[in-house]
Every structure is written in structure tokens, then in C-alpha cells.
Image (cartoon, rainbow, N blue to C red; front, side, top):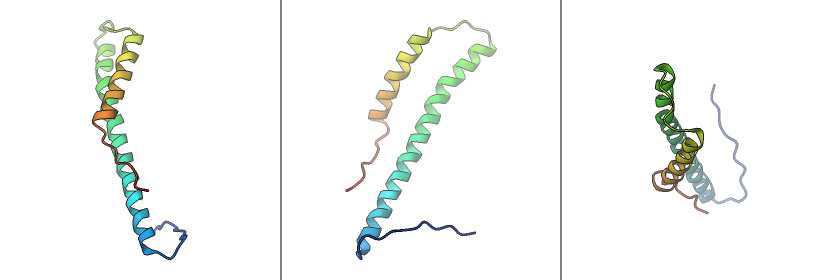
Length: 89
């Protein structure tokens, strides 16, 4: 089964389709980068938690400290590493 997206043309200019495809590809790449970032950052936080639970080690940080570090790391990584391409208008 072959699926195709519907395209609604506002004008008769072929360049409009090209621009729309470029924007769609940019959105797709940004979504892929975001999902990769979420999976990588959460795994790095989840594995020590599992080790702590299974090895019965007392928590090293209280919940507020963990949330504080998570917020700071998320802001830093998003602003520096993600490099999301802005859409061209």
C-alpha cells in the first residue's frame, strides 16, 4: 500500500512546493534531534537510579537537588548542543 500526502496549492509556483518540502524536512530533522536528546538524557539519569534501587544504595541526592540539576542540564544542553535549524519563511 502506497501512501501519499495531500498538497493544497495556494499558487501556481513550483518553488512553493520546493520550499514546503524543505521546511518539512527541517521539521523532521528537528524532531529526530529532539527525540534523540530526550532518550540520551533520560537514559543517563535512569541507569544510576536503577542501580541505586537494585543495589539498595541510599539516595545521594534529595528530590529537589535532582530536579535542580535536571533543569540546569536541560537548559544548557538545549541551548548549546541541539542546534535546531530555524524554519525559513
